[in-house]
Figure 1 (cartoon, rainbow, N blue to C red):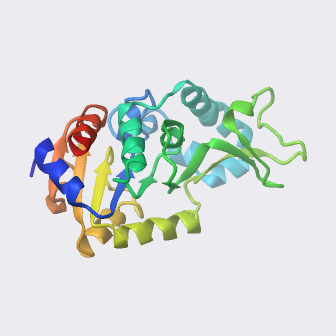
Figure 2 (tube, rainbow, N blue to C red):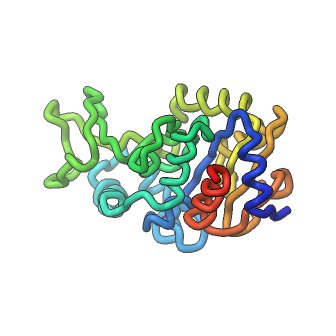
Length: 245
């Protein structure tokens, strides 16, 4: 069921605890391609060959050269868009408890959001596979592949590869917020990749309202309480303006 901005703003004003679940769609407007779907990264390469932890362990230089170098170049050129900034404004104004993001781009934090749960980790941080030293991606120079730490350990992005588990602290925090919120905004995601896909259903089962902000209906739409149909970068600033007005 499609919902008007006026109705959505009423729900947001009444909410005592709003949580946002964001996916690749919110960052497409920042120039970051999605992984799945039409035009996604997995149309041009096999994720099992380049994004599985076994592939990285077998040939980290190849994975860095084909996939991770490309991602580094894209992310370093990306900036938060109006949707990221609108969510940061909502948090600052006390209307957003937390963001649970499936994205690994760090753009929510760059926009000013403080309470961000990185469900799949972050490519904005690079860590050493041996000593676990961490550094911002901007400080990484790919003069050799794979890049090495000063301890000679192999450097990798601090994100979840296929075949790895969701970080326990992120999983726990996301589930806790999903069980205790009274409104969940599902933005830029079809909510089909598990276990993140279960979070709106957890919220719904606990009595929360679920509001989608997506360009098209998704598999979640039949159980959601409303769909704001369109681009998040256009709709979220309008929604925030109505709530603050």
